[in-house]
Image 1: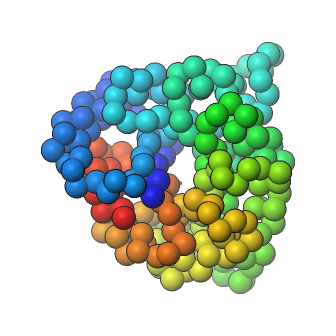
Image 2: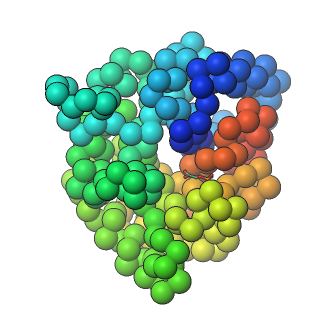
Length: 238
Ligand code: PGA
């Protein structure tokens, strides 16, 4: 079970510090309630990743450049993240695909770079509301996994299934829908692949979702922004 908070473009440096202080306090008393196989991380904006260095919270980046170094103004390289001790990198989040036109090919290149540098990519896939409603979810997801996961070592990655209609909408996929698509991803990849579900996960629905056999973790946006909610997710995810 791998539970990763995706803060998106939220929290200043001082708010990040505050979260870490609150988390550390609660973590002392709650740690024993967190399952032994539960791993976790927070996906913070680049400028705040350094704040996690001396904390109990492993850091996750929300993106990385597909290039190693050089004249790419505004970008962040994998070696910069590696040097900061970052453990995971989210790639191909639907917001990056939508607002920054990221393609499956770029996602695939980024994931390769991340693996080569010893970090773990969290490759996001998922269908739009239209695609869901016209019944093409599996077709869309299959196309995305085929292209985004091309030639990747599936033991070194995480795939996050995030139906776009469930992201930030409060409209969580039912455990049955989430399980069906995660199972489909497993059937088309590898038995041992770590598959996360994402989209409106919160402390009230995580237990039921995590009892599904093909869901091995979660990518959580809104509910990861408060230390006590995030800790609740960690204690409830089994
Ligand atoms: P949400 O976001 O939990 O706020 O729906 C999930 C995500 O986009 O990763």
